[in-house]
Image 1 (cartoon, rainbow, N blue to C red):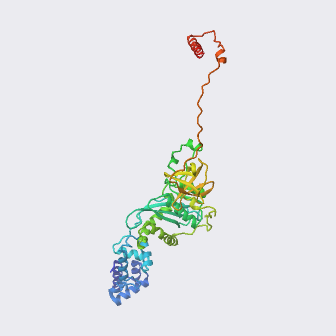
Image 2 (image 1 turned 90 degrees about the horizontal axis):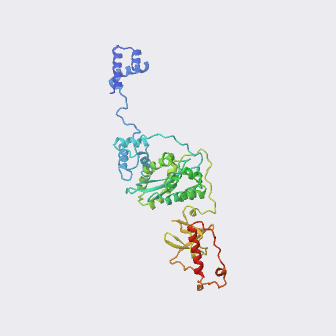
Image 3 (image 1 turned 45 degrees about the vertical axis):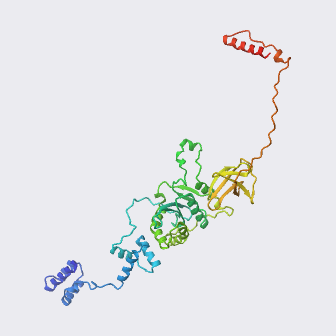
Length: 441
């Protein structure tokens, strides 16, 4: 019996003994006079048990059975579900085990059995929230997250792109490390599936921003000096995409929040699917992205999309690649990576004027190609450089010394020397000159 029920029982006895009026009892208990009369009558007819609620000790008809509770705890203790947070675990039970329970029910069952969620909410520093862009494609945020995505505890990097307006995942790609190729792959997926965005938001990693940028002085910038763009920056410029560098991690908080969610959910999903390699994981990501966007993506404020189609005459692979300049030697050959290659067209060597600059394109998608005069050509490895053709040298004619004739002016003409000697040094110079004259004769 609770204290409140004891108070009701005491007041009921006072009413039965005539020690208190109905109005006084109603004021003391905070009840209406009708309820007080009902209490007095019930205690008189049924005794002290009347003040106890009739459902006490009875199990509600909609209560979960002990079998269901034990089954939920048993499933949570399985290795494939052990790392899932409570919210994700509720979704997994409904998807894979056909157990449909609410999130609060799952929470109560697990907490009552001493199981805590691996994802705890901690108090964080609040930052001013940046409004979402009104349209899809106005801003795409890219980043990579190193994490032990598989249960073998080996780290790899997951590259990702998120639309700022909707929060939907546009592309994901696994790679052993954060690399340029990973960002090229996600940008190709974004452009192929949606179109070319207006801007890309990235951090200040050297993939996006040259470290020499901070070394420019104010005088250098005023004089027009610029730092050469990175390969990613050059590719974005060719596609007409504005590349924006974030100064803090909070500035690109939408994708940072995505990593927190994926680090909690994706390893569990990969483990359930039995995926342990990067190649299998990349093939699995398409279905995962579709399910994630269906659950978490929001509608943009404006339905029109800011993505625009890529021109038909542009080959995306020839832009999202490494481009470097080389000089052609004789025989249309050039050196790249300590190997000599030759430009070919239709399977035959293409004649190119020596010392001409060409652009070498390198990508895992197509290997090595050359861009020359606005066209793309294949290359082949040259085992030995062709011999440079040179014109035959003419034999040198023997040099015949020329001796002046006896009547040559040099022999006959008299040199007039100045009569005025300024100092002894002038006299010495004139004497030496006169002596050489006599020696030549």
